[in-house]
Length: 87
Ligand SMILES: [Zn+2]
Image (cartoon, rainbow, N blue to C red; front, side, top):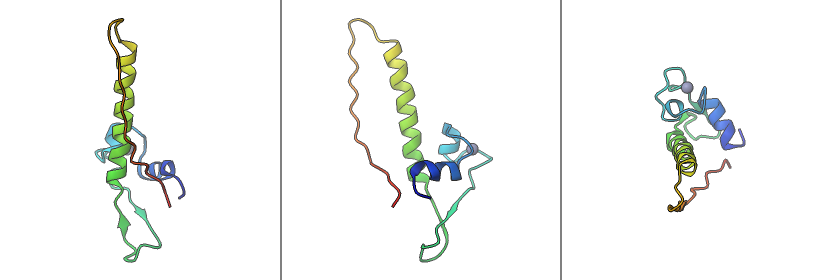
């Protein structure tokens, strides 16, 4: 597993909010075993998945705002990435 997308494909049946928020009945119990984990137990990726869910929600909301912006309005988007990576 080398990319964040691979992690999501392993843990989620889809990239919708229910899956990413671990509320989907089909995939909420999926876990990833990490061989190098000292206790060789399951690793919880929920903070990362919530981060992806937030990005997805933010993208959808920004798209709605852009589609409905008025002539006298301005949209300012400021983002601070957490830069999740797989190492
Ligand atoms: Zn799911």
